[in-house]
Each structure stands twice: as C-alpha cells, then as structure tokens.
Image (cartoon, rainbow, N blue to C red):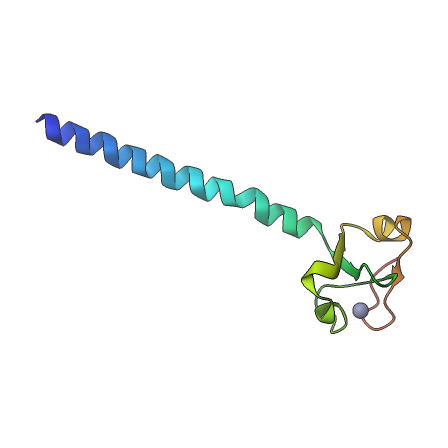
Length: 86
Ligand SMILES: [Zn+2]
C-alpha cells in the first residue's frame, strides 16, 4: 500500500516535471519569432532570414532586428534582393 502511494507521487512529480520543461522551452521560441530581420555586423544591410544573402552570414556575425525601424536606428538599410520593408 505504501509503495503504491510512493509510485503515485512519483508519477505526479514526473508529470509536473514534463509540464514544466515544456513550458520552459516556450519563451525561447517566442523570442525567436520576435526577430524578423537579420543583418551582418560587417555590413549595413538587413534581410529577411530566408534571403540567400542572409543565409551566407555566419551565426557569429548575425545581428537581429524585430522591426525595420530598429534596423534603421542601428544604421542599416533594406536589402535590394529580398526587399524587406523600411
Ligand atoms: Zn536580402
């Protein structure tokens, strides 16, 4: 009887841990969705992330913007190939 109770508590704890870990991964996804445009720290041009030029930027050189205004405030201009707003 005692063992059964322990097992029940353990399974509840496991469930809780699963729920908590799935919640914990959500904010990271939402953060990624906030950034819509990407530029290189070595240029002054910003792109849509699926632009062929954006995909050539190394991850360590990427700079992300959530809006055209933010990119322009940092001195960046829209790419002529993928034509992001701004
Ligand atoms: Zn582009």
